[in-house]
Image 1 (cartoon, one colour):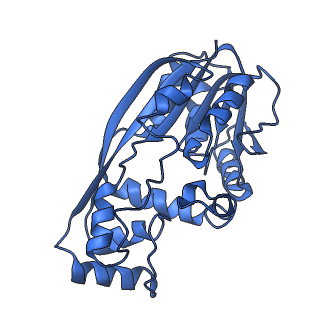
Image 2 (image 1 turned 45 degrees about the vertical axis):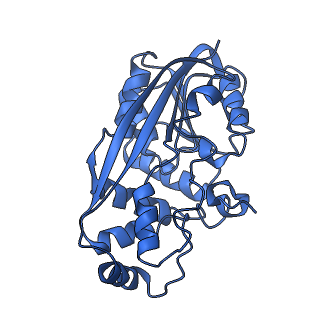
Length: 271
C-alpha cells in the first residue's frame, strides 16, 4: 500500500471515487474559497479551441464529474465527445449532466493506462487533475498519444507539488495530524515540476502555462468542510464537521486561512 493515498489503488478504485460525493464536496469547498485564478475548465476549452476546429473528435480522460466535459461540449461543439474515467459513479454523474445540458457525448469506464479506443481516433484530448493517480504517468500519456491522430492536440493539467502546503501546517498546529507537514504531496507523481518532462515522452510540448490559484477559507467551518474531503491527513477526530470546526477554532489563530496552488497546463501535439 502506498503512503500516498492518490497512488493507492485500493483507495483510488474504492473509497475515494466509489461515489461522487467526496469530489463534489471538495470542489464546492475550493470554488467557494478561491479568490484568485482562472476557471480551469474555461482555460482548457480555450486552449483547445485555439488549436482544434469545431466538429472535432475529443476525449476527456479522467473526466471526474464532467465539468470540463460540459465546457468542451459547449465550446468546441465536437462531432464526437468521449468522457473516460475509472469510476462508474463519476461517469454516471457526467452522463446525467451531459443529458441535462442537452449535450451529445458518450462515457467509457476504463483505466487510462489501457484505453479501449482505436489508434488515432481523436483530434484532441484532455487529461486534467488525474494523471497524479498513476505511479507511471508516462504510460498513460503514451495511451493518450496513441489515441490521437498525428498532429492532434492534448492539454494535460496538474498542480504544483506544494499545493495547499499551508494547510499542512494548520492541521499540525491544531493537533489533528502530527505528521501533517511530512506526509508526501498528493501530486508527487505528476506535478508542475515534472509535467513537461513526462508529457514530452510521447508528445511534442508546444507550451506550458502556469497560474497561481489562491484560496481564502473565511471561517473554521469552511476549512473543516474542505479538510474532510482530503485523504492526505490522518485525522481521527470523531463528530464530523462540527467537531472538526470546533477544534480548529480552539487551537488556531483567528481566520481567514489562506492557501495556494500553481495550476499548470501543458499544450502538446502528437508527432
